[in-house]
Amino acid sequence: MRQAILEVDGISKHFGGLAALDSVSFDVAPGEIVGLIGPNGAGKSTLFSTLVGLHKPTDGTVRLEGEDITGLKPHKVAARGLTKTFQNVALFMEATVLDNVLIGGLLRANVHDARELAKTCLARVGLADIAGKKAADLSFPERARVEVARALATKPKGLLLDEVMAALNRVEMEEIMDLIRSLSRDGLAVVVVEHHMHAIMTLCERIVVLNFGKKIAEGSPEEIARHPEVVRAYLGQEYE
Amino acid sequence: MKWWITGAVVLVAAAIVPTFLDPTGYAIRVLTLALLFAALGQAWNIVGGLANQISLGHAAFFGLGAYTSTILLINFGLSPWIGMLAGAAIAAVAAYLLSFPTMKLRGHYFALATLAFSEVLRVIAGSWTSVTGGPVGLSVPFSPDSFWLLQFKSTMPYYYIMLGALVVISGVFVWIRHSSLGYRLRALKENPEAAEVVGVNTTQVKISAAVISAALTATLGTLYAQFTYFFDPEAVFGIIPISVRAAIIAILGGAGTVVGPIIGAFLIVPMEEMANVLLSSRGAGLSQLAFGVMLIAIILIEPRGILALITNGVSRLRRRKSS
Image (cartoon, rainbow over all chains, first blue to last red; front, side, top):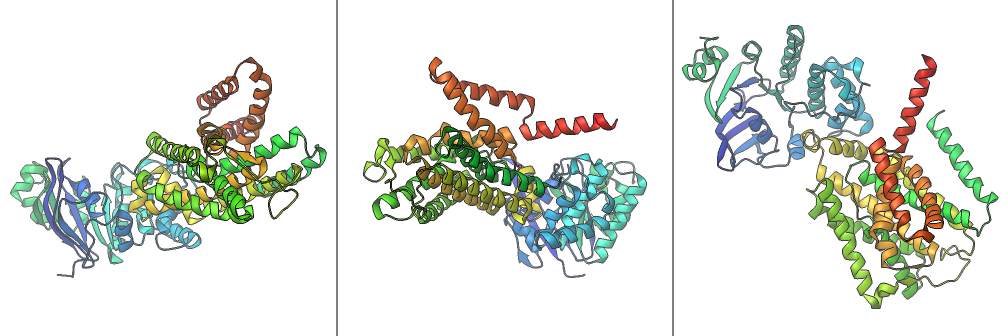
């Protein structure tokens, strides 16, 4: 197996007495696309937030390129090369699309270079023509793409995508999946949280299943589709 | 018209105006104060407008500036120009230290914490009599005319000094807004979590803005002391005369915009003077009441300030014309 770039080792997160995450472990190699699935409230978004430093884990370690990044502030995690998009879309609404992405670019460039980088990233997600629009005036699918562009502008090595395909039609979904595949070809380690099972099954080489904060399964899409506990907890009749 | 042509026209007009006025008269005094408070609103705007951290404690830095330069002048004969730099440095350190306890605070909590800090300084200034003169305050030793000692008999030179201060601070404001710090402040203002996740060090950004704003505010405290020749703790550390006024001037005109504080100051300062003249005979505090009513009105009509009111009006007129 390829040397992992992102190593999650025994991550737990307790809110008061509630264990939102219970000793979750998995690795992601460069160029790999890993799916993270599970019912609502399984801890997927909490896991992402914990990995990028928005929450301090109660226990466990996160390593990026072999270096311990557990408990670092989010901007330091981003500087090391790990960032995420937000499930509910957290753009800077009063700013233009270009300025939103530019702010990500400032991590590694001055304003001028960050603006050029932002244009490149917007072109990559197919939004070059609406760079001057205000973020608040965009449709939901467009906002999700700006989130991806802003994350790309930080030049990450690991990228956590939280439901960027929500509310997309079939064509738009294929476009985003092509984009994610091209990112993986560039060597990014990508983790995708998604509810569209079809997208997850065709996009990912490997899938991690969470339920009540615990990893209940990990494997190829075929293995996951046949896994009895996953079928019981999540997939139901559909994939039996 | 391009913005810089508008700016140049306004600046030339502002430079010509005093030649039509009595150089020691009342009108030029009011305009000089308006320029000073426009500059104060602009300094406040760096924190309040760009980062949306509503400070009600900017008097702390204003007072540090006034006291530092005046104490150095009285005791060591040091030029207020140098005292101004010393005051700015002290205010910058104070703002840096204040950043830590207020770091996690937002909204009212931040406002109250900054207010409390300025009150502490006001009380110290009122009780440390041997250095600050206590509640009586300090008088600047009078020896005009001297540019080096920043003292003039006529109001005219002060007018140009305040105009210069306003231009410099507005320049700093515009520069910050277009720099990486400005973009980061904007991100912080709109969504601090998202800003952090894409690499913005929100702690450092907040501190930078607070320190720059405080240092600039302190220089205005020095200018104020040299202009009025006399001040007491309430005059420079006061909540209403400095802290609230700075905030209201920026918010009323349009926080976060470069013209906002200028509009706000040139509305509020003359109106306040007028209210004092017209209403003071009918009972103390009436002018403050008029003030409060105005503020409530603007917040109900257009919370983004008068500038937004004007630009909305203009674009509506244009639309009507074109249709």
